[in-house]
Image (cartoon, rainbow, N blue to C red; front, side):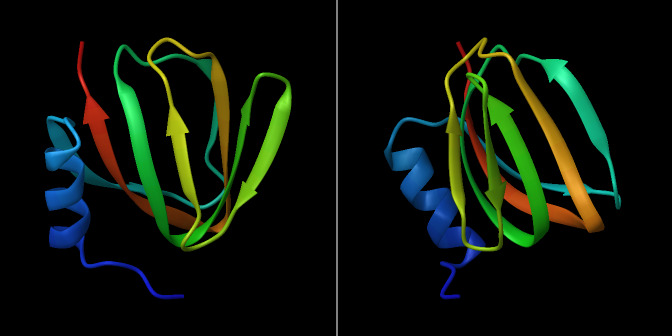
Amino acid sequence: MNLPSFDEFRQKAMAAGFDEVIEREWAPNTVLDTHTHAFGVHAILTRGEMWLTMHGQTQHLLPGSIFELDPNVPHDERYGAEGAAYWVARKNA
């Protein structure tokens, strides 16, 4: 896996119009039932594994996987036995 540095990820995201870049960490076996966000998301998983369900389809994500969400898209999140972390760029409305 060849991840960019957090600073490189942040710089590219800000240049692409995102206005916030943070790291999120999740405890083992965390489950987030269907919810939405008022912001758009571009993220890269950096540790652990997660399952992201949206539009009736589930993606199994591993380190290096990129995922995106438009604002207000209903989705579920489930994190693996070791928890997970990802860098996320947010584009607020």
